[in-house]
Amino acid sequence: MSTLPHRRARHAWIDRIPAALAGLCLPLLVWWAGCMTDRIRPPGGRAPLVMTLEVTGYCNCGICCSWERSWFGLGAPVISSGPNKGKPKEVGITASGTRARRGTLAADTAVLPFGTIVEVPGYGFGRVEDRGGAIKGNRLDLWFPSHGEAQQWGRQKGLRVRVWKP
Image 1 (spheres, rainbow, N blue to C red):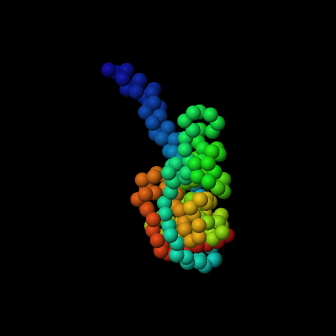
Image 2 (cartoon, rainbow, N blue to C red):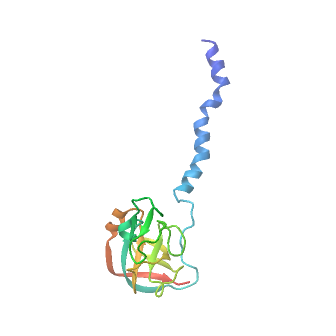
Image 3 (spheres, helix red, strand yellow):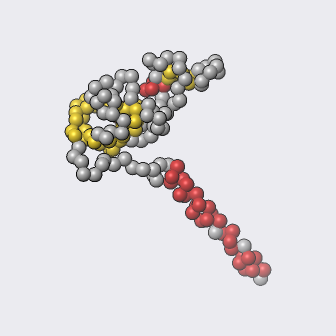
């Protein structure tokens, strides 16, 4: 029994391993979860334009983004099924070349060009980085991580939003 305290003192560093691992891994996990990414905020010193839009939700799924899986393994694993039918498509990449994430908006770029910041009540701030085949005129699509969340948002007509164009 007298050797137990000595042995415990000699290996005390083992007790600190979980805390050290947490200290190393936690910042990586926070970054990966998106908590340390840049937040979308309106430019300072400029008054917003108020617009009334029809706002819908979308996600990366084939239903929302018009794509199908190539089941024969020939060519690209995912092909477009809308206006670009048969062409390869990279899922989750917007028309501006960025990866879709919370805050990604799709709009008619003749009305709201890429880079436009929009504050949507109930969603928050977003940036126009995408466009869609059905997005024409005063319409806006909000990106959600799942189809269920996009459906839960639904279609909201006559929503007043604040807009900061680039």
